[in-house]
Length: 262
Image (tube, rainbow, N blue to C red):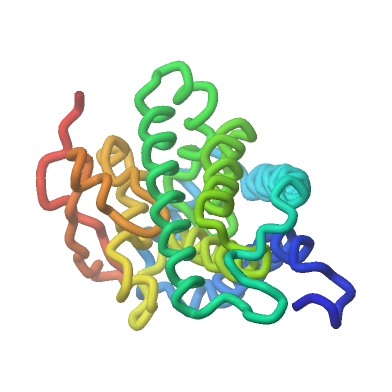
């Protein structure tokens, strides 16, 4: 696929999430004021509630992306020869690829849920590790993967690696899968409920669903990421909500049941 650029599928799979992350987040940031009527939080809230500067967030994200790329190359070397069930004469069928992607989505969701919930409820890990991500009380697009490097490795890098290995997908398929995961993650942190957004139409685990988790009243709920809400529903951490239009523009998230402080 990357022959025209002189890049192998493995290199593209490692680098594509970085390119897609900044391109998609950049689109949201460039059109920021155009979306004021669809924001979950005002710009004033973003400035006043967040506990970390944008400069620090950019540095943290770049560090995480460097670490992800550094892990991706040895992973692909270790699984060299994995063609996702294809051969040179007969490439993988759409059904095989679709099955691999679905397996990868379920693996990633399962891994993310249990790691996310564990590091949230463990007081030591929350204080020294997970609290870094929650400095963004009002999430924004390019802060989607801002987190402590150890959390980044345990949740994101390890989760992505397990998804690749256990699904049996090829590096070429992983290019598209990792790009999709990256776009979904950025969208979940964009703080904008834009009408017609396909991620909001096809996934109940979306921007508002995850934004509720970032609020002080909803931190113990909606751990699931990035695709489904099954583990939240099964294990009692699902928090339903409604969206109410603000008079000055945008939306407020209203939990539809009491958030327990345990």
